[in-house]
Length: 210
Image (tube, rainbow, N blue to C red; front, side):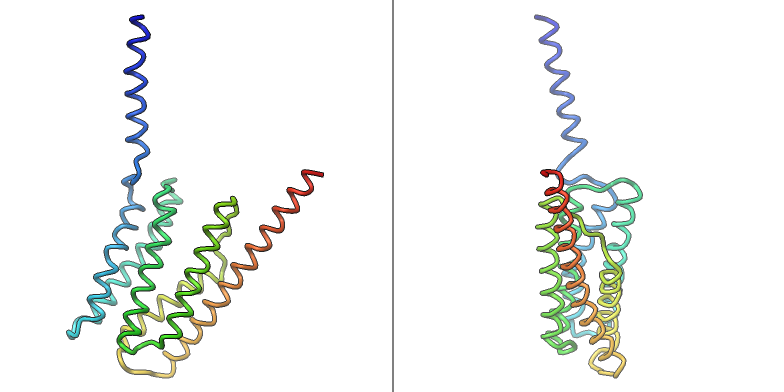
């Protein structure tokens, strides 16, 4: 009886250690960078909409820092084996919040056409919904060259729109058009890749059943 009574606290202590080891928000560098990116979103909006001479410069700096955290947290999570459920959930949300906030602010400043922002935002949320649905079925689509080019062009477009201000040089219009085209193509590419992976999974399942 004494031994069983002593074993119970050790089991409970182990359970408490496991809870601390796997909390809802594991504190590691990638997750902190993700939270930082979310906190920078309102700073970006205020800086863009602020009618002060230094507003655009501050907005550009904030957007660059936030974009760098996006690149850095994914790299650190992979290389340090620090991938967490929190990171998988919040990292894409932080990315969408950043780009949506920047686009909506630029539209309100008449620096970007509303239809351009809507096309990009619709693509982002559509792909996010597809990715969540695919993940629920155990299907993961790796980022393609279209997706990486889309991200680079979107960052370049936002920075250019902030830097140029109210001017509309030809190269900026070409950059916006290229960003829209690549954004749409990357969405189509993701949809086709997901469809192909689902078809392969179904064929493998059918062969296994046969």
